[in-house]
Image (cartoon, rainbow, N blue to C red; front, side, top):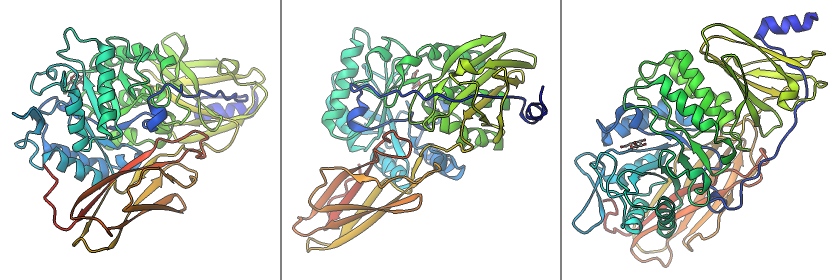
Length: 522
Ligand code: GLA
C-alpha cells in the first residue's frame, strides 16, 4: 500500500478513488407541486405525537416548543412546520363549522397560527379523512371536506396532515382527491400530508394530489421509542425509493431522535437513514429538553444537506456486506453523491466498496467528506479503485464523495417572519411598508426571489439582495380602500437557483386593517 493511502486510512478509516457521474431526476409533470412549488424538498418541522400523544397537547405546549425550536438553532437549520397533531384542538360547532377548543387553545387556532407565522415558522394542523380522528376525540372531515378545508385556510394552516382512521367504506383515492380539491377551492396553498400508513399504496397515485404520504404504521407508541420497530419501518420505506422526488415524498413517519431510551449512536444512525431516504424531517421529541448531542444531530447542516438536496432522489441499499448495508444511488446537486454505511452487527466491520458500484470512474482523484466528523479526506488514488470504510457496531459512516474540494450546502431558506400586519388609522390615503427577510443558510448566494402574480391593487412587493439575505419590502397604499380588513397571500419563486433546480416557493401573509374593523381573530 502506498504511503499516502496509509495516511488516509489512519486519518479517516477510508480510501476513495474515482470520478463521479451525475444523474438528473426530473419531477413528474403530474405532480401537485408542479403548480404550487411546495415541498420541493422534504418538509422539515415538528409534530407532538411521537413524544406526547394526545396529552398534554395544548397551546402552552406548542408555544414552548416554538420557542425551543428557535432557541436551539433548529429554525436556523431549516425546521419550519410546527403545530398540534391530534391535540383536541377543535370540535364541530352547532353551525357545523370547526371551532377552536378555547380551553386548550385560548388564542384560537388562528391566533396561534399568527404567532407561529410572526416567528418565521409555518403552521401545521391535523385532521382525519373519516368520521373522527383516531382517538375519536376530534371530528373528521367526511362529507364536510370543503367547509373544513376552508376553515383550515381561515386558520392559515400551511400544512395539513390528514389521517385515515374511521374511514370504513370510504374509497381512499376518491377521498384524498376530494380533500385536495377542497384545499384548492379554499384558495390557500398548503402542504398536503396523507397519513394512511401505507394503506392503499399512496405512492402509486398520490403525487398529483399530495406532497407526502406515510408509507408505514406508526413508528412508535407515544413516548415509547422502539428501535427495532423503527428499523422495520426504515426497511419498508427503503423499497419505495422510485416513488419519491421533489414535491412527492415517501414518509416513514416522524423522527424519534432524542426520545428517551435511544443512544447517541442510534440517534445518529436514525437521522442519517432518514436523510439518506430524503424523508420528511418532522422532529418528534420534546424540544424543551434536548441534550447537546441531540441538538447537534438534529441540526447537522451536512446531514440535512443530503436530505434537502434539490435533486430529491431517495437513496437506497445497493447491497449488503454481512451486517452492513451499503446505501448509495443518491446523486447531489453539485455532482457529488452521498454514501451511507450502516452496521447492524455487534463487531467493527471494514467494508470495501468498488468505485464502479457508485458509478465512479476509477481514474479521477476524489475527496471524501465525513458528514459527522466534518472532515475531508483526499484526494486519494488507488489502482484498485476501492473505497474501504470502517464502521463501528450499530453505527453509520455518512459520506459525501466529490471530485471537487468544495462540499457546497444547498439553499435552506429561513425567514424572520411570514406575517406582515399593517394598520392604517383611517380610510384617508396612506402609504405603509413592512419587510420580511429571507436568509439562505446554504453556501451560495441565490438569484433574486421573483414576486408571483395576483397581488391586490393595494399592495406592491419588491425584493433586494444583500449577500445571503434578501429583503422583501411590502408597500401598501390604502388610497381608495374602505374601512375593513384586507388580506393577501404573496408568493415568491426562485426558479434558477445555484442548485440548478427550482426551489420551493415561499408564501407569506399580508394583513391590512383600515380604520378600526372588527377583530378577525376567532
Ligand atoms: C395516527 C397517525 C399518528 C398520529 C395519530 C393521532 O396513528 O399515524 O401519526 O397522528 O394517528 O391519533
